[in-house]
Length: 308
Image 1 (cartoon, rainbow, N blue to C red):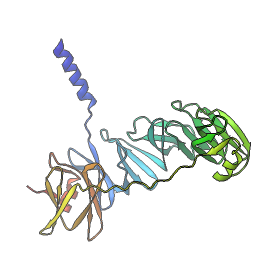
Image 2 (image 1 turned 60 degrees about the vertical axis):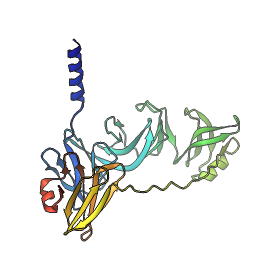
Image 3 (image 1 turned 90 degrees about the vertical axis):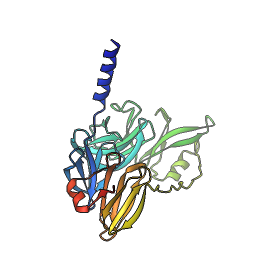
Image 4 (image 1 turned 180 degrees about the vertical axis):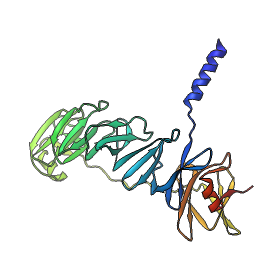
């Protein structure tokens, strides 16, 4: 009986560990997809950019994002709004699909979709504020089906801690303004005050509500500088550029004179730039099996191989 249970658990574990079959690559500045087992080209390199943030392969062409599942190879295309925000305790990127808003997290598994095309989206870590036809709606975590507040006519939103004179405390408030009135909501989106004012300026808005609310001034700190890690050492010999992974210590060479860039925390991904043509080539390297996840035909053209 014990052996049967162990066997069943093992089978469940193996079935849950779906093996990746596809990976992105870049050849002469353009991105495509390679089939990892055969190293055959699965999608030809026609995409201009790759977004390494997402778990699925994410390739871009203008305002279009195409997500390719690493296991099935299934592709889905969305239109990006270039809006990135945090709500529902997660980070999302705002897209359009069939003229409707879709918010996609890093793993792209649980998408949050709406029946409207929102032109503005704001997140405060937990809740979502969106705008459609000049009216704001608020969706409070974790109900993203029914807005907690809707039809707020405003142009701008201010969210932060504000000093409230009545309670003599700093309270997290959401303030809508820029149209006929200023609406002040508490953290639970209960309307505290409404002021007649059409100002679109932050400073004028706080003047209008200064009888009860005062802006909390904060110091601005410069962002911390981070040094780019060096994952590879470089050498040149007999017309080839030799790259050695500092972690795996397995050198490989490519014909020509190249420099390299890296992506932070992606030690198996390398970006190679030809110093003469300035063309870019990038791909993932399986150091354990000594394989370049780049279509075979391009490996032959570039003369890239491991040094034994």
